[in-house]
Image 1 (cartoon, rainbow, N blue to C red):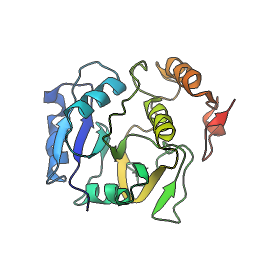
Image 2 (image 1 turned 60 degrees about the horizontal axis):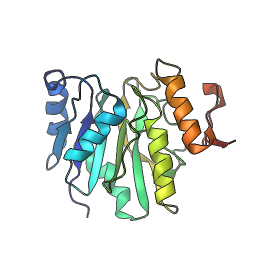
Image 3 (image 1 turned 30 degrees about the vertical axis):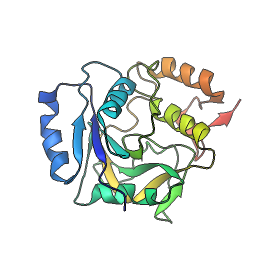
Image 4 (image 1 turned 135 degrees about the vertical axis):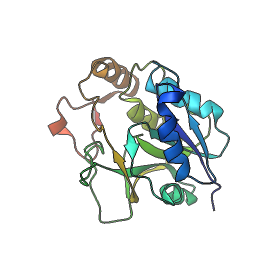
Amino acid sequence: MLPPPDVIIVTHVSELEISPMRVYVEGYSLDCNVIPTCRIGKSASINRNYGLSLAKAPVVIQVDDDVAGFYRGWWRDLISPMEDPNVIFVSARLMTEEGSFAGMMYGSYNLDMPTEDVPQAPTACCAFRRDGLKFDESLTGSGFEDKLFCWQLRKRYTNGRILINNECRIIHRNEMKNQHGDYYEHNKKIYEEKTGLKIPMSLDDLDSTEMVIT
């Protein structure tokens, strides 16, 4: 069985502002070391990397500061597919507060199996192995850091599996808030230049693969 992970709360606000969520997460994450990043005003990538620099466990979970719906045993459910060493990244199934499936799953809505293999997955509530891989800090604000991180994982682990875990369902309050936002075009350009992959111009174009080779 995998040891308890470090749970990183990715946030760009102060420790005081994040303290209620920290208490909340710790209450449902017994045996885990909970690490809030709190690099005030810094990008999502910088905060994610800062959290990784403080982590010690072989597997880390990263949760955004706008997620909720934790329950006893949630982190064990999330990381359980990683008992298979070929599984390199697992995302919770993100839900809305109303109980519907969140949109930020990149067109992936196959609920027929406990887990679904996908080309990439969101980082709002995710688990992966701490192996030195970092998030790209040339990205500003938030947006595309998850896509680029999954792309880097696929380059490093050619046979690795990225999964959506339908058996761990977590609420994401602000899913898709960065689509076409302040940082969207800047980060999209970096992603496309580094990967050679084209992002669809409209959310209506998204499908289960999303990544289209140019």
